[in-house]
Image (cartoon, rainbow, N blue to C red; front, side):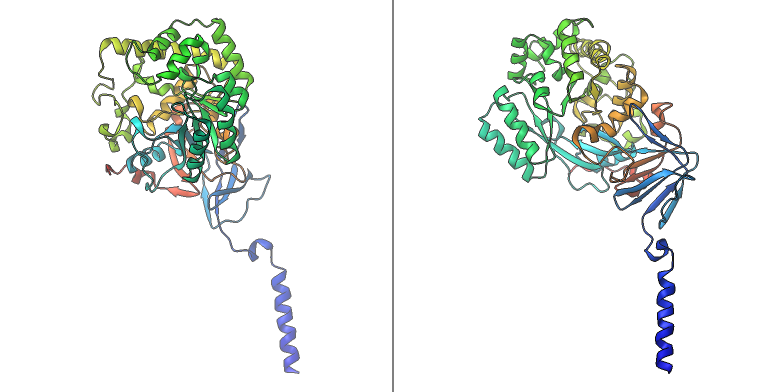
Length: 449
């Protein structure tokens, strides 16, 4: 009789356990942010007051509005009433050479970097911790080569873990499609910095993005001038083909027929453009000294290509060269990019760090300011250029607060839609779902390995 009673009690206990609410049966995990105003930047901004965001590990699981939806149970809850939550920023063209660079990016809210290294930018530093997420890119076709060798180059990049093929000047039009299609078949994104292949041909092929105003404007120049630049794209001689082309750009008017045609092609295509105007920021009359930024304290001028003078914030170059650079950036910012933007071109933000004095973390914010004040992107469009547009261009799960996206987020004290400088007022930074101690990032050490 006792044995029967024992089994009956056990059955009752099992039945009672099965009646417990589901959320009590499951182990509680993840992090919940509640109360902030959620901002997903875009041309039509998604704004949710009194929002919640639930994420676990490096993935956002759910989000919504408190009161309308019940947030999931979580191990950790962060109250953020009166604050603003947005995706982490993406720098679309920059290098990471040391731990100080990684810290500078993170401190300034940059959680993803498309990393380009070598030549003037120096070697990639893979051991940074903490560090933004890295999508490495490397060139294909920088100089003329047989198609078979170019495709083998793509294979080697894929095997080494690169995520982006930078399609370069040496690609002939009959090679460009093959070189585009092969990276795509391997899951690599493509960015164009073309020469012998026109940018219109690149758009027709489907290249996702183009980099540098001065480069993707080659279609505006006479074709023989563009071909000469493709043969010698990097000379700093003011009499070189590159500089003859740059001087041609400074003479353009907004109603130039070739400029207008190129703007229409960009707008009609699926390709994004990444101006990297920050490359020439120091050449603008109104430029401010980047060494005054707090994060500059952990950076070494010797690590940066042609850095600004720490005292003056200016380049120390001959007057003739300075005048040429100033004229060029004025043409880019007052004529060329405004024409592309008005036509409907789509933008990505990249700082070009660390060439010509650009600096990690600091120069992406310079780029955002220039996108807003020069071509005239709205603040929402500017923020989208550094967030969700990278998802649109390349399909990566970055730049948006939504289920399935990476848990890279900024919790701000002030609304970034009111003023871009509010991006600096970060209360909390999440990278890969991990809360980063921002104060520790400003420890004054430098890594010169």
